[in-house]
Length: 169
Image (cartoon, rainbow, N blue to C red; front, top):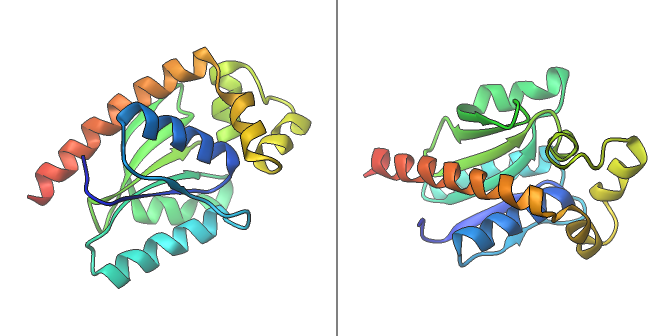
């Protein structure tokens, strides 16, 4: 597994999914998320960390693809390696570095959860998982059905990480 992997998450729900992946893959890292973290801040942080480290940084980011023109930054900077779960999730590699991988929810993590576990399908439920108490958010989304999906995601993510390591060696 990658040494010194930094995990960045856009929102509480993305953080909970990240924690599940960390547990499944037995990674020795934690999720970096701030209440003010949003997709654009995460994307700026990726660019900044990449430039400051001169490309010597390992990052896993969990972000939303969004809709409309908001998708352009993702399209411009990430190459999709894999699409899963009825097109609600993509695994992308940063075009400037194989060491930066993103799990991209299409268009939002809420849509992925709605289609995966049939929860968080209405606007009121969706607001609850973007903010509030992270422990409450995680306990609400962690279901057996979601765990099965995240296991598949973790397997596929590991394939892409191994491929990207092979390409950088």
